[in-house]
Image 1 (tube, rainbow, N blue to C red):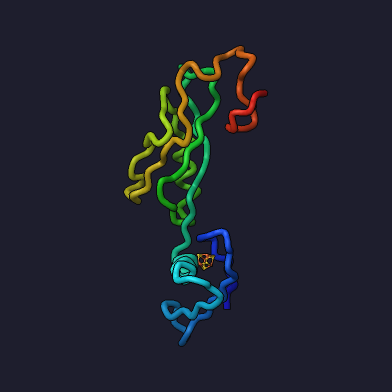
Image 2 (cartoon, rainbow, N blue to C red):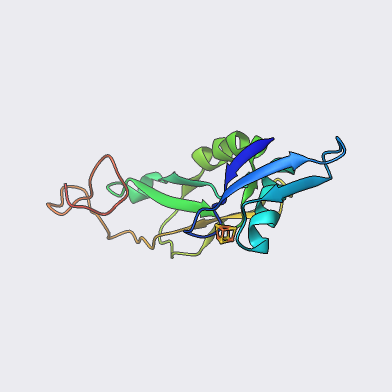
Length: 143
Ligand code: SF4
């Protein structure tokens, strides 16, 4: 038996997952208040996926602006996340970028796009500005 917490909605039902007849495809799922919990549990047991968030470097012409936050448009299989992050960290993004721009399309043929989650142009966060962003975060807070 395996215990999971459903993360599909804020209720967070506690799920119990048991294999029926010793076959992994025959799962008995209890504790879910709605069918989405059973779908989540099956996927979590068979092929867990996660939405990946990270930040990318900017190219040198964007000096002053530090990194741009990105996320996957679809969840990525968990065992492939490190490889995806390697490719995200190799990117050097040219500005301007709009939130929603696809920075990596169909990563590795997985159908996963990596998109910017923030708009940024060359004039945001100039070098020497008293309004530069926090150096540790991409939250936009003033330093
Ligand atoms: S099982 Fe349904 S109600 Fe419970 S947390 Fe998941 S989505 Fe929400």
